Every structure is written in C-alpha cells, then in structure tokens.
Image (cartoon, rainbow over all chains, first blue to last red; front, side):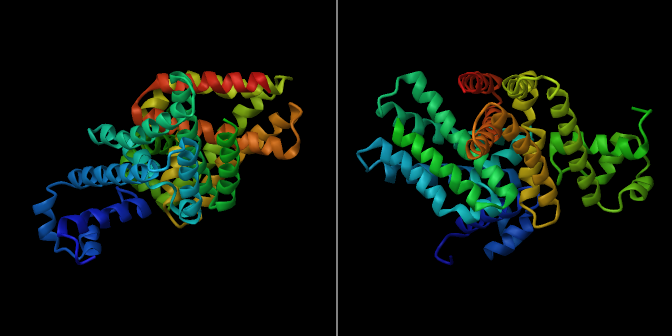
Length: 186
Length: 186
C-alpha cells in the first residue's frame, strides 16, 4: 500500500469504505485515517467529498474496462459472457455481505440530484455495451443483443441485491447456474 | 395528513424522506419538521432512529401485503402477475427518479450489520412468496415456481436500479413489455 501515491491511497480507501459502509456514512476524516494520509493533505488532492466520489467512480470504470479487456482475449463471446458469471461466483460471499460494489454505489448516489449520477451511470453503460457486443457476436441482431445485455446485467444486479438482503450466497449460486444455462442455450 | 396520529405522521414522513434522500441523510429533526411534530415528541414515539426505520419497514410490508391481497381478488394468477408489472408501469417516472422504495431501502440498510437487515429482507420475502404462489397456480412445479419468482422479482429490482441510474423510464418500459410477453407465454 505504501508504494501507492497519497492520492491513490485515498481513492483505494474510499472505494473500500464506500462499498462496506456507504458514501454518506464515510467521512473524509475516516477515509484519510484508513489511507494513512494526514487529513490536511486530503484537501490538497480532493477539495470536496464529491471530487473523491468522482475519482472512485472513474477508478471503477477503468478497472471494469481492464477486466473486460482481459476477457476479450478469448475468441469466444459465449466464453466471455460466462467469465462474467464466473467472476460473480468467485465473489459470492462478499456479494452476499455487501452487495455489488457498483450497484450499491449507484443506488446510493441515484438519490441525489448531482452530476455524480451521470458519472455513476457510466459504470452500467460499460457493462451494457460490453455485454451487447458479446451477444451481437453470438449472432443476435442489434435489438436482441441490446435486450439480452439489459436482461443479463439487470438480472445480475437484482440477484446481487436479493442475495445481499438475505445474506445468501446460495441464492446467487442458483441464479448464476440458471444464467449459465441460458447463455449456453443461445 | 392532520387526521393521522403523530406516530403515523412520523412514519409517513420518514418513509418519503428515506425514499427520496436515503436513511443516512434523513435526520430525526428533518423528519419531525416534515411531519409537523415537535422534535421533543419524536423521542416519545421512537427512542432511536433504528426504531423509526423498523416502523417504516413494517409499514412497507403491510402496504405490500394489502396490495397483493387486493390483486388476489382476481381468479387468474397470470392476471395477478401482470398487475405487478402494470403497477410498475404506473410508477415509471418516479422509479426513474428515485428507484424502488423497497429495493433502495434494503440496499442502503444491507451495508449495516444490524437486526434491521433481516427485517428489511422481509419485504423481499413477501414479494417472492406471493410471486411463487402465482407461478405455482399457473401450473409450474415447486422448484420452477420458486425460480420464476426469483427471476421476476430480481429482474424488476435490477431494472429499477438501471432505470434510476440512467433516469430512463423508457428503459423500464422496454423491460416491462418483455416481462409481460414472458408471463403471457408461460
């Protein structure tokens, strides 16, 4: 952690705290302490909490794009879609405890009437665009690929929410198996 | 509103504020002001904010059960399921602005490690049990009815979240039409 710049340490600490306890409940002072950065220095990097939230959102987008890029090395779009489900399976326990780091962050910010809402929605746009491309490459026409992308991403988000609410990784596992069967049958 | 007791006015005001700005951002003082109840009186009815949150959750459960009971007057389980989609359609604009009052409340509370999480999940249990009953009455076997109930409720929750994030009622409308087609085809 000490190899990261103070700015990156703040973003990383904020990302974890926003995920585990929510944006509103995470103070700049708590984040600074977690990042081992003096509170006075925080304002040098992020003049407002919103600018830190924006940096966390942009980090999520970049990390998501990097993950999708790594899966795009596979020549088979079906296999890439299955990679998304496999990665959810790898995270079942933490998803059941804290929900989706992207979905829960968007949900919280969506209550606000600020430019952050549009920035947050960029995360979902990255998911939808990537999934649409895979379905299209599987041979579905434009509208079908768009609909299937929405079905997949919204199904996962809904499943993460219910799984989190019931603290039930097995609930998510059942849904992932059914989504896998659907993708194999396409 | 003045015909409601102070306790009910507090619950109603809290319900709206939790929905529109989230639980963490809603102070007891703001809720008291909104309910036109002196702050000193709040503590007589709700000694802690958690006890007010619990009352709001129980109110959501009761209201949801009342809505489902009203739909159960229809003899056709398919029609009852379509009523759930129709009611979402009636709320498209507000769902696109604030998300689902149940889903967003659960999402926010799920970050916590308190007894409220289990009480919140009761809302989803009411949805799942009701939907499972309808699918079962449509002739699906026990496991299929359970899976379809999870598919329907999680699909709606995911769609509400994306719709809210993109502030797009038309995104929800498209999904509702596809869910209607699925239910007609069962």
